[in-house]
Image 1 (cartoon, rainbow, N blue to C red):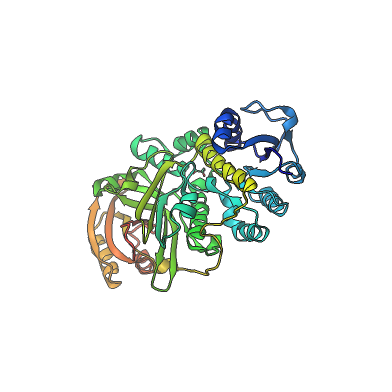
Image 2: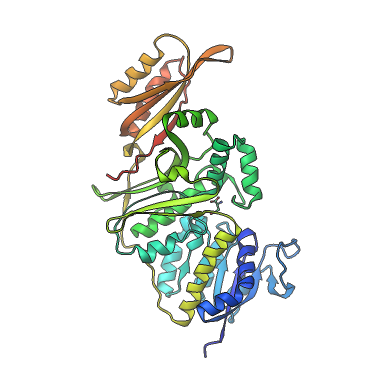
Length: 439
Ligand code: HSE
């Protein structure tokens, strides 16, 4: 016999878990009326019972043993918000095997173990929902799975890490130091428990892998994606970007190349034209542009991190899970991994570039750089420089070259050749310039 009230087990009571629990309580009547089903949070697994909490929870709801959630026959749905990939993996796998639909926001888990977990989910006919894994409160997953289902996805381009976007915006607009901006993002609950994942691009990469796997129905391992973080973005580059009509954003680019049926897959700080919509996305906001062959261009915009926006996405999935419990009509959207798609080697991916060399101010420097570029047929479309400055007791210049589109492998070769000139610093600042065109 079907029980009247659906029982929820919640694993994790950190920032997002707290937001989910608060909202499930605060908007309880609204949700029950809209969904036309009754629910109750029956148990909450936490790491440490003694930890002080932001939210009031009846002590009898709490347990330190996540297995109690999986083994409780009364629990219908499990929400996994503990993060990390060890315990979360065990928990999600065990829950699916026990026939309990799972809602998770754990992008690292899905990027690493998604293929296996979705296979179990398909085999068992038990859904795994993951709206909160990408873009915070933006409903990108359900949009890809449902609203855009008739499209061949040509590209997905976007800003999908709130913390790094908050830091870049603060550096650019508020002149705030990198360290202060990161501390503020942490205080606001945007950053991961390990904020290096936000900074080094891997949080965005995990999300990109999920979006790519979803849109193209192909399993993709984390080693397939090229990832650079925001660590080397400087105020000097922001100043040049502004002067040249750009801003700098940590961008995710997923592009389908029809020729060879291959995917371009990369995450890196890029120059974005000031005229493009994505250049206006500031602070914790995310934006994801999806181009489909039928729909054309779409852009999804909203808060990409934080307690309540992410809780909103989690609860959207909880409602799907509740409906699924009552009316099983299991669907996977684009998911089944029927395709095996190759990822383009980064050396072959092409964009224009911004390259800033710190050089000694002496005759012949520009000629040497132009000559090495010309040898590899790399065209220069613009240059910019600053008056020389004394660095380490020597007069130095910043020389910026805007280069025409060429494969990254070719530019890399030119940059390597330039290392022989001792008056050019060995590691120039290199950024791709995004043109937002499809091949
Ligand atoms: N740390 C993530 C971000 C949280 O800053 O975007 C949302 O996934």
